[in-house]
Image (cartoon, rainbow, N blue to C red; front, side, top):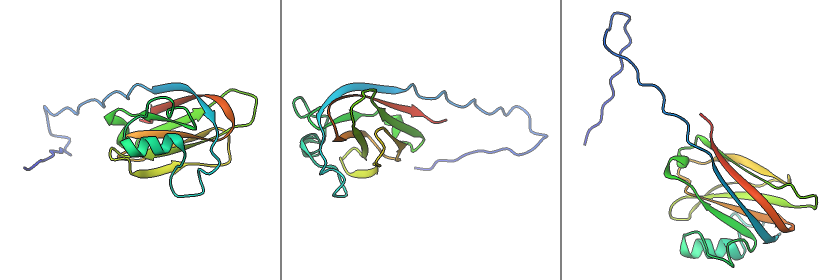
Length: 152
């Protein structure tokens, strides 16, 4: 199979009009409650714990009680795996908490992470991403909002 692209760079060309850019993707927002923190996350290259293990074992969004035990898995639309989207997780509680984000492809292979000492976390969703694991490193009964947006 062959594909081709036609580009015209002439002031004299007529009848060639560029297509308008596609509209940005609508944001994906998910809210939930994560029951307990898992401070062992971050000691290895990949996330650990109840939610992460259930997710990576089945390579699917886990059912309760694993979903929300110490993390939360969000499945992204196909278009969000282009490297031009951003994810942010936050909470508005007064007690201490710390979220980390882990990005996985369709076969549940880790592609990247956004994990710092900040309570809330954000980062660019790596190309090829299909899932985001929001992992609670510190805290208990922490409500969260994860928002993934198009950066175009």
